Length: 282
Image (spheres, one colour):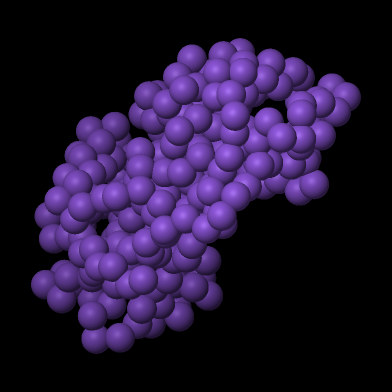
């Protein structure tokens, strides 16, 4: 899907607000990124591109219609989106009339995707200014040595999904930009993400958010859905990459091996030993 606008910065701001809205609607329905869906969104030359990819039972049309009907929390989403873009580029987002800009964003939001003509807004309605202070933090979910080695591939997935949801929540609450994610294969195997922030945060807040993320993933059945999909991996919409699994864990997993390890007992072992570390790297 695509929409075009005469002002690239306006379009980019709308892209971020729309993504926050879709994420919020899906989280309210108990759905999580990577387990249940993925989003592809970017802006080029004033054109916003967006795609929602479902991995579980999600009515894509219903979600997108709801998101396009009204950005009911747009003032809050607006502020978060501004911080996200400032963290992404390191430049201040400048606008003269916030209320009018939000009205224009809502008008742009209600236009049909793919079919409308270019939406015109004043060039000075939103622009970029000088540099802002951006801090980069590294959020890490380490691999516990107390876990059996044969469930390392499952641990990699569970930790990865938890980290992905955590940094997504961090971006949508503080206005961060996730700049990278990696799996370190040293003596302390771990998944890590670097998040750029133009707002203040604390390790205590991130720790509390991590605990809430794990609680939400458990209570809404996301870990169980992951395990069920792995047990039927041959029909899974987005199966784990065999190459990445082998590279990161040293184990080449077959469908039968996934069925053996993807059970509730192993999930609980992983969840019970999961932790998060936060460090400032820049």
